[in-house]
Length: 473
Image (cartoon, rainbow, N blue to C red; front, side, top):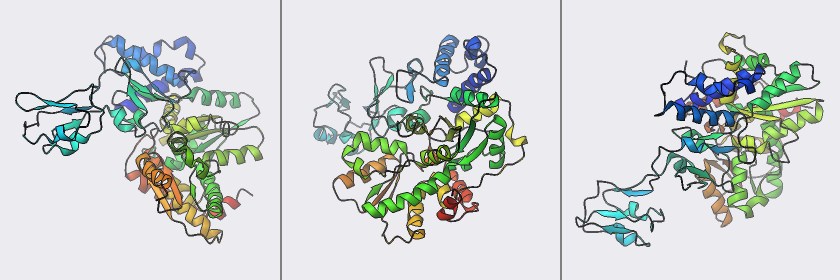
């Protein structure tokens, strides 16, 4: 039964599962040092050259599973001891270089970084190279290639560099928390902090007589996850864990689509506020465009605010695919409404920490959002919902949406807007490829997830945004 895309995800899950299991039993602090030995028993390493180094790395994973470095505000951290196998690289000349006479690579290099040996084979002086890639573009043999580390390739905002020990380091001023580096690192040397202990603490206190009730708010992309079980069984499993009830963040998406369509018509131009990584990217890279970001909270925060405003003693745990949501929950504007954030990876660990086989459970119901709220999970869904919001409210405004699939597409749209050459009046920013279904905290990634989200949307009883929102009144 395959639950994860990669073995790195599975390793991360095993650590989370063991931390959670001990936390449920109130024995975590007594058995912290035993966790690495539980995962790697005996004296033979399973992934590294040395069992002691392997256990040391697992010890660092345990720390991140317990919340990580409290002094580092970033939700993404590097395990330096695990980051030692990737070549630093950069642009390199391969043996495909034929020692041609044209020397186009030399001519195009403005830094004088290209030289040749006696066989006319090119050589790159790393002290002069600025990684512009001009030489690679003009080489007729494609003999010059970029050998950037996977984390650097994954990070489209250039927040990752290498320190003196050749380990990855993250510039917190540039990082948007999207987690692309987390998913792409082949050694699992970059991880998102987990707040699974906070969730367990909430659930245990609610079971032991506390007045509050814990709500599980699930992202609409859950429809493409836990493929080995039925969605109704996942919902039932959440209640078995101790959650009072399960609500759809998609209902918050309906609320946002309705309000955001009105705001767009009033202002004439808008960028979405649903993806926290996209909003953070605007703050760090395009601060002059902050004035155009929608004033609406994200669907997660919007629905959480409604619940807390109307329900006494409610505690809310958001469960989704997004590492950036962990950072969003710490914002002063959101902190009062969200008590903890978990990814789908962490939810799987939570199920298994209680030995809960969700495939053996009966199905429960999850149906309180519209088709349009549910399709927020994939790229283009928000634009469709805003169009529907304008239509349902009889607002005469011609929407020219610019759906951005991934942070590079977001950058191009924002750059055009900054130069007043963008052909559009609404930028839908999604930092992850495919939208939320491509989030770093997903169990599985792939094109099939889009079809699952659309199918889930079509199953909604409420077909219109207004009908879904009216149920709140």
